[in-house]
Length: 436
Image (cartoon, rainbow, N blue to C red; front, side, top):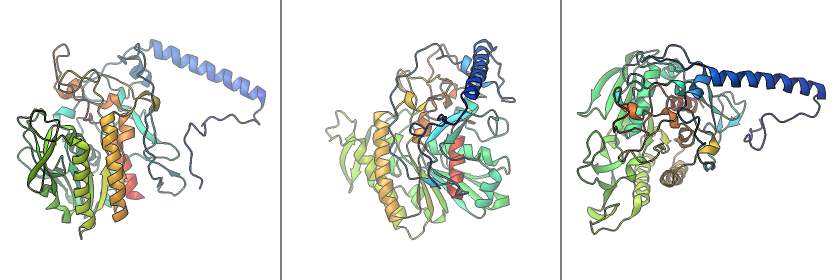
């Protein structure tokens, strides 16, 4: 069937010339009256109150009316420039479309779980419990252009994962992703936690009724690394990266995995010292060290090459989903110097662009993924960068803390995602990719 084109080249509401002129006139008049009524309601609807648990969806008009940015100018208009992904066929083979090109559209059904119904939400992502006063960010869903994306079916997912092992490998965003998945699956079966490391960064869960194992493995650089950082991200020394040695925290277990979701990204933007062949070869942002600054590009390319080469050359052939980098939404600073995020609505595509560093990370990811895909058909691209870029409203911000004092200096989190929140759509897409 013919592939749908982008809406800017094939307008959804193209005028049809065989319409009767009078029918068009009365239709426009009726639509104008409807829009006028909605506008009045948007402007005069009372604000809604919110408890720590969502029960009923607030009108979307209120989510807009309560936006702290409503009276401010819109963000700078420049287009997000993302390379085109390979198309994915829908399960019914009715249409072909790219699951990662689309829009966030209103969803009055709201989230499929709450902070009360799911017990595995990490405190820093438990925005409702921590007192976030708005809930409009919960009432949107990702809608690819040209095909339908069904909501995540926990029963279907668990049936597909019967007698299987799924591992998430990466940093705290991967852990965030796993917690979303656990919350969605808890509607059918609660997982049993069977292992955690000392810092609870690597964990394993079992679903006994389906003999399904789910794990998250902490490996933010994917290669061997010595890290000297506390829970708040404060480093006592530069990380030491061994760019020619894959991290055995995950490679030692790889033979057990049927499915893998692996990701890198943000940690490579940190100051670091690089090692190859048992020798310090350079660094990134290490002024005063008398070392050559090789840039994060070198380290990230090398790390992905090592990780992908390990998997493509392994005798064990797991299905590998490579998730692209996650953009942050800090404004007026970064996490360490007062940056914050308090938007309450998604962006449109022409209102935001990917930052320079994120665009470089993603370019490296696409290049290395293509190389791995040519070597192994088991590699699939989970390209969440673009759809995540459009959700500045989905982060904890100051509500990574329990009822923070907003007039005090609190560290904002504009990288991780509230649960429930936009990250749940990643699992909608993951299930579709498993099906097709």
